[in-house]
Length: 221
Image 1 (cartoon, helix red, strand yellow):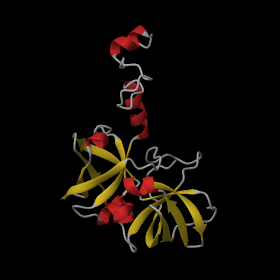
Image 2: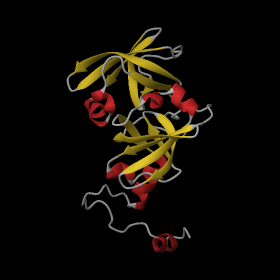
Image 3: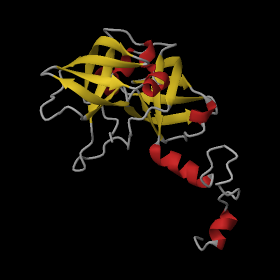
Image 4: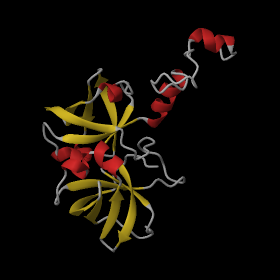
């Protein structure tokens, strides 16, 4: 688990194909002391496993599923990426709970400076948009951000100068593709409210949805 509070940046030094997956070599100035082979690091929000480690760089494996769901298929050597080490249970949770499991990607459609902030609008598929609420949390390239406004096809975030300075979001341009992870708690609530349904017609799930009447009948209200 992660918090979406970016610790440092890294440079994508090398990309090696591994079947339909990839192996990434990343140079970084982050303190890797205590990091071990097999540990997890969030790279642009994607939880990846360290398979090789040196003082100032590390290698991570990317499965085909991760490649297909993220913006990494569009990145080239030399790209700057956000890095966060895994959350310790003793840490303060300054952002929000981030799993590092990317739900999909979005495309930046607008960047507007407003006073000391930058307002960014990101277009996303409906299945991601319907998991967002105004003033809720979302992780963009691993950065924990608050949603200002959302619709069934896009959402808006506000970037303060500090965030722009220490993460890749400050260098993003209109048309760029970014990794999106919606709020994990919201996803579980959505699944619960759908009574476990995945959208399929499986007979294993009851058709009755969660309503105020159902909650009252079951003694919750």
